[in-house]
Image 1 (cartoon, helix red, strand yellow):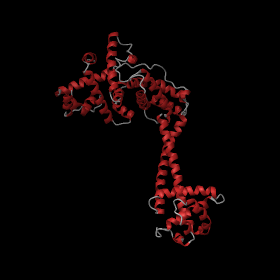
Image 2 (spheres, helix red, strand yellow):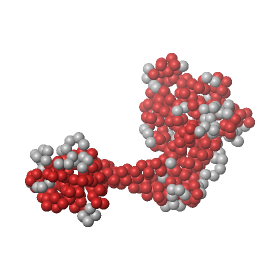
Image 3 (cartoon, chains in turn green, cyan):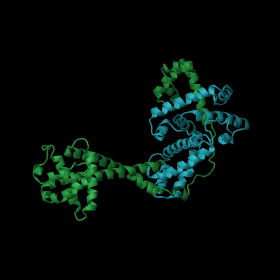
Length: 249
Length: 204
């Protein structure tokens, strides 16, 4: 048998062609080529005869009667009505698009953010620290507006970034940074003194606020946008996964 | 044929709007073929019944995505997925072993409902060969089994099978060829059946 198969593999007419021949799936040219070959090849004639037999035996299998009616009842389809399935399925391309755009935007923003701060390794660490500081401040300095808090929360970080390398491509307005009284909170190591330095940073930023506004505003917006795009990406990706899962189930 | 198509599309359209009655008209006209595909795919009447039921439920749920193509291919595609799920499910908690050839498993006897129109002698032969074939069919990899079943049991063309499995005609060719080659080898190994097969299908 094996020997036979090896032999067939070197044949001008392969098994696939013989089966297609049996099934009437060859065009006229291929059919006459196979027929010409069969004239001279006993092995292929035998193969055709036997494969045809297999095919006919399968065709002769009795068509089993369906044991019952498979008509659906309302209860069969209740958990996921057709209209809902249709709506979800219809929204799939949109969800996919939103998820993709949001993921891309997120990475672009992270890239911009990291480049913006040029603080090397622990970009995400200080990012976390800052958002933690913002929440702390939300509770501590209830009187401040949200934006003001972001600014003051970010002020020491902005300064910390600007100070070590004064030529990090900062905007002209930020060139004035070292000159403001903001050096002070920078004395604290920015990693663990966040909340406290922000507390006292709050009064002295009031003086430097106008100067700081452009640059800091940008980076805090980037931070907020990062979080927003991440949230959108997760939401869209999640519902996409849900649609897919439901469809499979 | 054309008007049949149009009727079907109208039924699909109504099903899409949640009309279960309309969908059940489709169910009743395809359940026989879907069930027989499932029976050949999963090998036991109980599993085939479950797979058929699942197939129609998921067809109804996804009817919104049925747009204009062949309803039959669409249903067969869903049914073959349901069969593969059903096989997987039963493999995980096997109450009925699917690997046991029909001749050995008592529960599998009902598989081959003899054709009532055939004479008694032919009927007996049919069911013997039928059981052997079904057992061999179940030993094929699922993709080959599906291609062979769609071709020889359901009588689809290669093109229609390609649409059903969302593949190419080349893939269909190779699966049918590999599947039949295995069946041929298996039948050759049972000369007593093979002889009968030669006598009963060879000359017709």
